[in-house]
Structure formats: structure tokens, C-alpha cells
Amino acid sequence: MSEITINELEAAINFWRTRSPSTGDELSLCKEASALSKPYALLIVQRRTAVPEEGLEPAARAAWNDYLKARREKAGSAGV
Image (cartoon, rainbow, N blue to C red; front, side):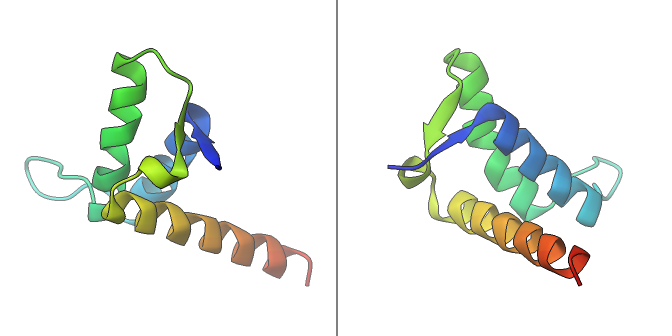
């Protein structure tokens, strides 16, 4: 069972915020950052440091997996 630390979640949220900045007068988060913000907030409220990847809701898991894929692609292109 793979766990995602609070620091990793924060990095993923920041990645999505950089890629798709907040919009509108209300500064709404993009759907990926929004999906990851719920487990991030729960970790803070529950004073936990990690969440099982399997415990993420489908939208959060998709955002997490897309973040990991983008990070791998960036690392791969840096070595070229």
C-alpha cells in the first residue's frame, strides 16, 4: 500500500496551480488542485502526515497520477 505524504500532496497542488492558475473573481482552483485539496485538508485537520493512495477519491487519484506522469516526463526530458 503506497502512501502519499502531506509534502507530496502540497507539491502536486502547487504543480497544478502553476500549470492552471486560479481563475475568476473568486480565484477558483483548477479541478486537479481542487481534487487534491480535500485529502490535503483532511491530513491537516486529522494531524496526519500521509494518506494511502488507495484512499483517494477517483478525481484526486487521477490528478495525483497525472502529476506523477508529468514529473517523470520532465525528469526524462531533462536527461536528453
